[in-house]
Amino acid sequence: MWRDAAGQAHGRAGAGARIASLVPSITELLWALGLGPQLVARTGFCVHPAPQVRAVPKVGGTKDVQLERLRALAPTHVVVNVDENRRETVEAIRAFVPHVIVTHPCAPEDNLTLYRLLGGIFAREREAEALCGRLEAALAAVRAQSWPARRVLYAIWQDPWMTVSRDTYISRMLSLVGWQTWPPAELAAAAGEACAGGDCARPNAPGARYPSFRWSEALVRQFDLVLLASEPYRFTEDHADALERQLGMPVLPIDGEMVSWYGSRAIDGIAYLAAFARQA
Image 1 (cartoon, rainbow, N blue to C red):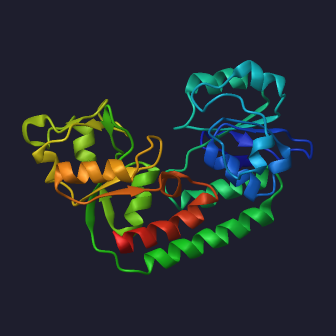
Image 2 (image 1 turned 180 degrees about the vertical axis):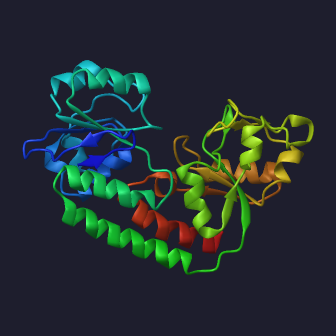
């Protein structure tokens, strides 16, 4: 038996398992495990690996799943994620899908558990262990290097501007190269009281994982570098250039998929982040 992130026990799936993935990075992982032919549904954001994934029917987005469309495709297993999918959607799916597998990687090393969970359920242990070996090697390589500490703000949205708190997968990924994300945990938990005047952050709730913020001189003094992610908002070089002129400090665009996608993408993501940090 294998237990998912919700504590639910899962047995071995039969050879005829029909899998739906509502998580883009896990759709890619399922292909890496050799399970692509068993995928019967995906979201419109599940775009890797291309072009193979294009043949899999779409059932809406991660937050707006088309339940009737999903029901018609008759999956036996649906893979969801705590951050990506709405709780009410997952509960509705449980009413007509026998097996709902909940995932929630919170740090790069959590991918080891993820690989083994899906590899175990779907009889792909050998493939899962191969991925584990590659991930462990990537982690060992980046941790063997010396990284100067830097304070960074990783922006994921504008209007309103939003970032990531330190208890997210993204922040823990960035910490591999010595980068500490803003805001500090105490600020996210205290509704911005650490900022001068209390106006440089507006967390959505105490302890918010994706707090919003406003630019100010007090805010800019708290970090050394701004990173503009390519997803979920499509920040570009032009955005980075304009913001750098406005702030008078380094602003760099970064590949959001390589930093935020867990699953098989994390292996190459670690190498990408190390190379990016050396040049930043």
